[in-house]
Length: 225
Length: 351
Image 1 (tube, each protein chain N blue to C red):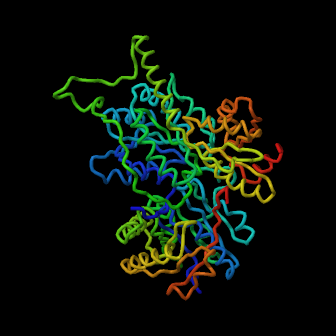
Image 2 (tube, chains in turn yellow, cyan):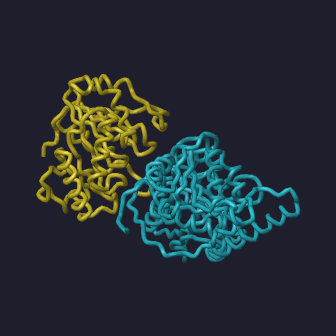
Image 3 (cartoon, rainbow over the protein chains, first blue to last red):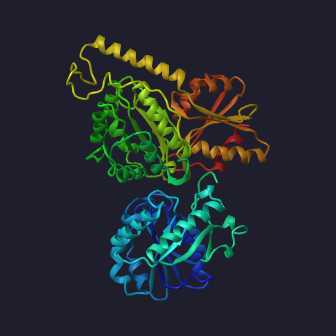
């Protein structure tokens, strides 16, 4: 599987579509073939379950994490580190941007537009068709439009992430993916990969899909698990 | 319907309210419940005969609810600790006026502005009145996203049934976490007709009014007694709880909401070590499930109350136990969530 193409990878998508888990997993995957990898927590809308919670684990794997530091890590403030602009321009770094949800969360990208647009980047929209407001082709198309409008950047591909969290089963993945494929076709965008929880890695194999399968390990955990 | 959908707790509350027929939402954003406000804006603004208002303050929001429900419609407001404190005057007025509505409190660390992490420090406020005067809310304590859905719908029904404000008392974790939920077809419930008291324009009938006072102390005392009778009926009929493994337990934990969910993991972990823990999880905090606790206290002599506070519900547990068993306490506060490991360590201290 080769899902690595551009130096800067921006994950956008609707609120709760799975961007953070995917961005974290993707940065780990990326680190396997690149020495310098950084992930930026650009979530200005979520108060919990953010990339910063996996900071220790990511640092141990040699991945740089840019997120609000110290006490500010617990805040719900739209804090943007000045370091981000430097990393965007540093061609030695493979950079993953984990952006907040919906058009509102994507607004922050407008800040970097002039830096990013001429660079080697791709912007991937994560879609989970089991989330409110992205449950049919029309809704997902609308979401894509809103995100492009507020980020002022173009979406270059779709990440298919059909799931019901712990209640996911094979049928859920299959049916959701069919819908997401229809959307991709309508939007004339490629599906870059499909995300599947690693607990299905023995059951659901690559040969079931045309698109690359990317197995996801969950980092955002709940206190009773 | 019946299809599964992946929702954040806060979104699920919003959708449940809409499906329960709530078309009027008034609120002011505050973390960790802002997604309720955002969801209601997204949905209600597209609906007919509906209104969404982001009010100028929490005080304004609760008074907009007061006005809306006086006409007989279903309305809701939501907030977190600091905002709920601001709403207390209005809540007391609504209780005095015997009007039905739903108020959601997704608790965060306190006191004061506190933190934005989950907590359960608003138990006293929710269950003992909260505002001034002798009154109670019907208080539900959900423990999963599905329960946020089901209990929000029930809260609207019970509020109508008793003409009393009802509260959903969640916490930031429940509001922010995502789980698959189902909006099931609900059996039709018979609710009292509202036409005898609603303010809908007095054309063709005598005018009526709704006020939260009476100048004559004897009349006001009478109203208080009417309210008290109502609370007694609620205590008699509406208690809900879940009991897990309480027969022959070495120790029974009493916990609600997020903490109860953690305790279920503790029960399983303890079993592997040969320790038998039971759980009583109040689903309604008012009315409080005192009977089951009293009955259990006559059989099991050790209780542990676990809360994300420094000890609030424990007072109700102690009243129910009434000295028949030992009642211990473990709490984390300020937004810290107790882990299954530390709760089990605490249990071992008392065995």
